[in-house]
Figure 1 (cartoon, one colour):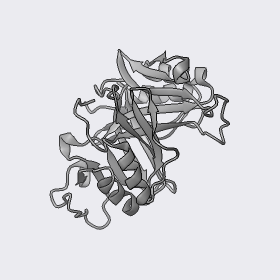
Figure 2: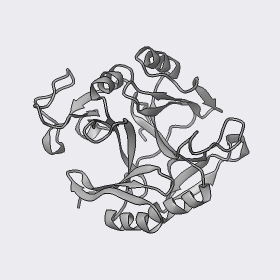
Figure 3: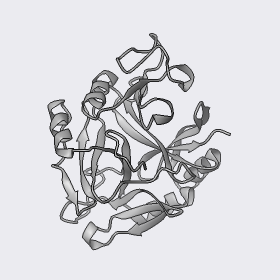
Figure 4: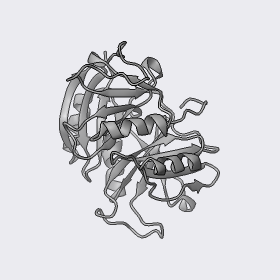
Amino acid sequence: MPETPREGAPIWIDYTCHNTEAMKTFYTEIFGWEFVDQGEDFGHYHFIRKDGTDVGGFAAAMHEDGTPASTEEMPTSWMIYLETLDIEKTVSAAEAAGAPAFFPPMAVGELGTFTVITDPAGAAVGLWQRGTYPGFSLPLTPGTPVWFENMSADFDAALPFYRDVLAWDVAWMGPDGEGDPAADSSGAEPAEGEMRYVTHGAGDTAVTGLCDAKEWFEQSRWRVYLTTENADEACAKVTELGGRIVDGPMDSPFGRVASAVDPEGGTFQIHQPLG
């Protein structure tokens, strides 16, 4: 993670599930993760680590009083957190733009402050204002996250929200995954019929994406790409361990990718770099 804070950039991911031991085994078998318990003071929240690198967090689904939550109350899921430099200001602006917060910003000791909002297109996303803890590292090595994107069922509602509230430096992506020289942050769009996809930052500065996904999804959702040395082997392991592959693996301009579902219904993307 860059030492310099960047408004609207991914800064953390975490995973909430019900059968924690089974899910630890599942992800360890695929990505070689370690889980480090942060103790009773933090509700036994775990850090996910790979070769000493902080990947994200891991938690049991539970209510604030520590009692277990049902799958209906709290479905198994991955959450992506975006950085904000002033969480109170961002939450106020988000709510004014039709993106309510699930709860008021909550401090985690001196580590930072967080909340979760629902963007105007219906996708849940976390916000994190760093304190002493800067967030994850992104070495782009096997077992770590490499990309984050919002598959939006209402692109026209989501784009101005991320641009105006979370200060995205909007760059339009053209055909074949390259930046579109005819499109810029002023709002120019690709030609009619082409996929609409923007990134926060252009080229090597891009850190996350927003896709017009109404053709494929009725409900907007954020998703995380986790990299691996061999996508096909990772997909086979997912199936062997009781998960499902719902798309791919297939080649893309950015590597070999697949969409996976773990045994509890949590969704994630598998990525193998080009070459």
